[in-house]
Length: 322
Image 1 (cartoon, rainbow, N blue to C red):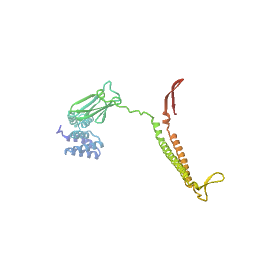
Image 2: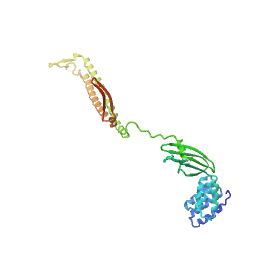
Image 3: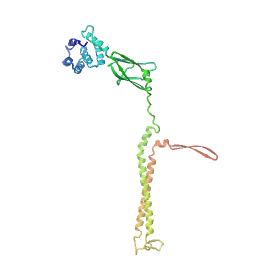
Image 4: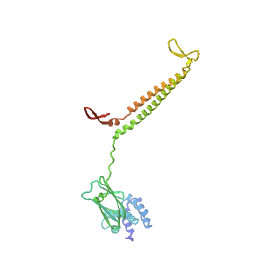
């Protein structure tokens, strides 16, 4: 086979190109020249281009030959099998194609995965990442290959097989599945459903604003209380000689000594009262936003069960918010 006359293939294909487009004939001739130079990669490329432009058995045979030279045995085997189907009896190319097919049969490997009665219906088999039909025989290059079997219930099993030239390997699918670890189901979220979790996310900013506002308001009220305490202390320290009692019984600054003797503590008192008022408003708004921002999910699941007992009996109570 190593000395097979490629000129026969060229002769057989010449008639096919008698009326073919020039581009297809040119690509075929380039592939033929590359084969003579043992540039098999270029030859396969040019034969492939010629076959794309105008399919012909001789061109596909050229592809099979260059693939065989490159060690792509399974691919070459498939192409030469197609050539054998396309050729008519008595075609001069037929003996060459038969010789190549016979030689490849001894060099390729075969892999099959068989089903059994207990094989899951959803079982899928891949070889080197390519899914194959269960029960079919796969013609493949010799060497190491990855076989993966996966089922929804049984899990996934991975196997490495070493195939020898001219040998066949068969697997029973049920045995492969039995070795597979079970597939863990997707975890079911515990707690709020997705819709309620989305509602909580949407209202969280309002509640956060409420807590911040209430905190600032509480701080303002505390500051106001401090100012009021300071105002009282300032008032107590004011020199009593600066005060005078009016005819109606009220005490006030003596206009002859210090008309503004109350200015300091009254200013502090005003600041304290204003701070108290602003703080109270802030606390009120904060509490309102916190309460109004409480999402429906919290209200729906806020349920409390507790026991109770009295001298006349006992029982349990259910308290919740809806």
